[in-house]
Image 1 (tube, one colour):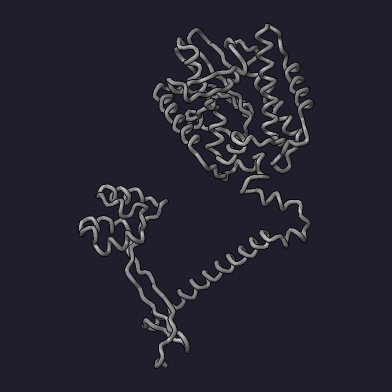
Image 2: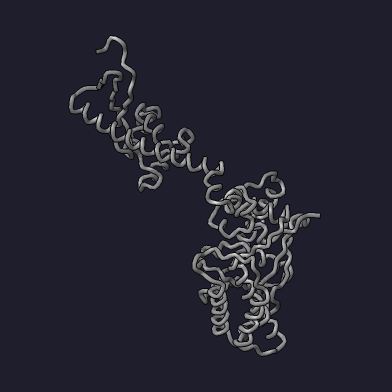
Length: 399
């Protein structure tokens, strides 16, 4: 049977293929739950109950809603809830969720803006005519402001405040719009609405048919990539701190394996010792490189002051040369765009496709590309003298 995908399943693969493998392919059980996720679930439940009761004409006061939130929080709290941020307590998170609900209630009471069609409404989406690629999901709330118009609501308790562009590119609610239009083809308009509850802020977005078609094609291609994949490598990001699979992830397993060691055993553990040794060697190497640069600079000044190109000791001689070089704008320099355009327009881009500025300097100085283009590109750089210094053993016979 073909896999039915969800927005979260696809997003997990985008964020980290290894987590996708643990979660959906190997179905590795985990009892760890992030406190942010726990708090978000309790807030969603309170809002779900609010709108469910309202559909049956049951009045719901703010106190009633907050009491429900408190009961569910206490009943479902468990010892494996993880708090990553230092100095933040469970009570702090409880208060954040409570404030989210209070602000929402104050903004939308008496909740008569639209007719609620469903809460946690299940939707299914067929991405192709044959039904080979399918998706499913749950809409936080589906409402109807007027005939032929649907509003798709999503509640967020994230601390991240998005830009309008972030949400105009959001995939999850766009999938829900595609599903809604398949379920109710007579729908004329769909508006996507995000409630960022921590900030008491509402964002809205609409999707054109062209944008939805591009997303449909992109999603089919992603599903094909997933189903053809034979390896699911870990991808490190800022989200790793909240991942429930750290203890078995190749990127963090060693950290967890050594966490319980005594101080003595920890410092003697082979991997720990090797990392410390390599770090020390890297520090020494960096110091030596800096020292070498300082000595070379001093040697260059000495040779220029003496008017010589070789400097001798009893066992070695140093050759000092200055060669012509052109320094071109780096990746972040203002002149970089014009430089790249000039090379691309000339049809020579493949020769320096990563714009190797050292190679470009050699090409321009040698006029490999012809005088006109070489001179045009040369004007975008800065001519300078670059030193070449190397030490050799002294030949026999030289005193």
